[in-house]
Image 1 (cartoon, rainbow, N blue to C red):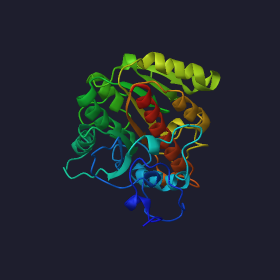
Image 2: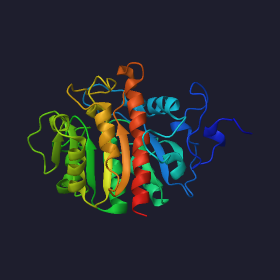
Image 3: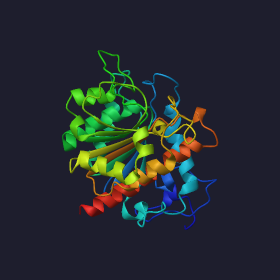
Image 4: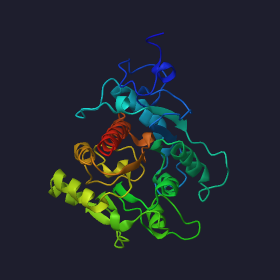
Length: 315
């Protein structure tokens, strides 16, 4: 029956859904729920884990908050894209990744396995965190399918501090990924950095000052020159944005990017070999008026639009 909740009755690939934003099941941009990946281009999966935080916890509630905020944006395609990613791609909300395998922080195999299931089915993954450590098992899964990865990393922090033994947290995973050969630092770039870490491990840094003092076009070109045609994974820590635009996060740092700057950079990346995406560190307990969740939802749908354009450009 027409008019019923699209999360239950909709079909992937039919485009944005113009329905009331204040009711209905809360799926990502009203995409249908499902676990059957046959013919699906992108599965959106939440990863409600925040046991790796070093400051304020709460990012485990990020996937729910992002989905909820997306409801108010779901009525039309994201502006200014000419293509509706929910029409160009068959997208479903895959639900959340739950830990059914036991273990603590050093055992995140359930995340890696959940993402591998998506990739092995021929779909791409858009992940909603969760703290930033969830990107590590995601990179492990993508590495198994694509080989060494170029990382496009939006953040206030480099997340390349050394780790040893079980001393791992959401500031160490790109150290691990580089040391293990999963990520190629010489083909990777970190955007929006504004905290001190003198050992870059070979990652290129486009600091927050670089973004503020140079044109968007020049930052986009730096990214494209750096990653080239290698398989590229975009990870967006919401604290890349200034706390004025995203207060609801565990480790906010003043002096960050505006929403417009970040979105403009994402929109300029058409043509890269994009293989995977995530948005992490939304912690709604510290949010105000859903500002951070809304930014996370907007970034997520724009990453879908970018993926659609990149895929079409490479077809």
